[in-house]
Length: 385
Image (cartoon, rainbow, N blue to C red; front, top):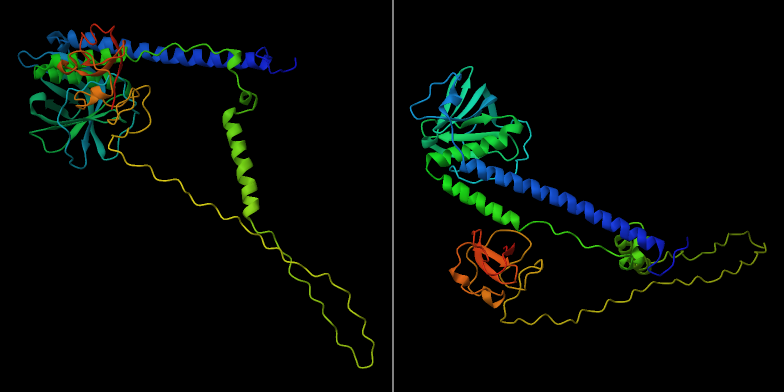
């Protein structure tokens, strides 16, 4: 079938079919990942709310529990590691990372394995029941805690021990261990409610990031560049080469052949010398280059008005604070002049939370709260900096 310029061209229909299939596939993958993360957040929220141990869970373990001590978690196959060099670790925090860490089953440099055995988490301490004895880390004496983001290693510093030590675990058990350790430490200092509030905030923020179903493209939207392999990128590269190559040839000096010289051979006296052949004079052509015109554009005038920061805004209004809808850090203390650039809702400054945009277009400081954007059709998206 011949290709024509009308919207009924066969290649236009094929292009629209490919584009729609690509959009559907991309949306399905993004939606599946979004649903999986939401299920994991709600699972952690339920686990944090109902988190409790049991004294019966320690039955059969070669461990004597103190009065009131209960077992939360246990795992065989853990390894005791010690750092060769002393380092200062950050203080223990109640930060929750719902995503599984991308770790590999490897031991980082600078650590040595000294024992292996059963790891146990209770409401008071972390223990390793190894072949060479018992090693425990009491929560009340912890002064440093660090999880390696690329390896299944957790290092701990306690007040009564100089050397830094920790556990090397199987990679598939790292996420559960780290979350359970965070809950156990929070439970000991009576801060479990802070972990639950953090999960509620993550769930509210996750609900705003649901991917939108893409629109359907029609054959009339196809462009001629779709006929070229590589599309617009190939056309742009070809156009750039078409401009660069002639310019390079024009600016280069053409080769000039040196002038020919006639040599006259010496002859004995009385001998007739043949006249030399006439040689056409060689004219040397020198290439000249056109001088490039100087830039006469005047520099931009400075004004007292604040200039916008950066170019990416993802739909946000132009503002000098760098606020956008693309991503970054949440804004809990916005600039004083934010309402000069964004449409602030009534009672904006009385909000307690982070900056969000409601579905009716106004911005509010109630992000992360159960009543976020109440009276404004709910939360649409987060404002980032």
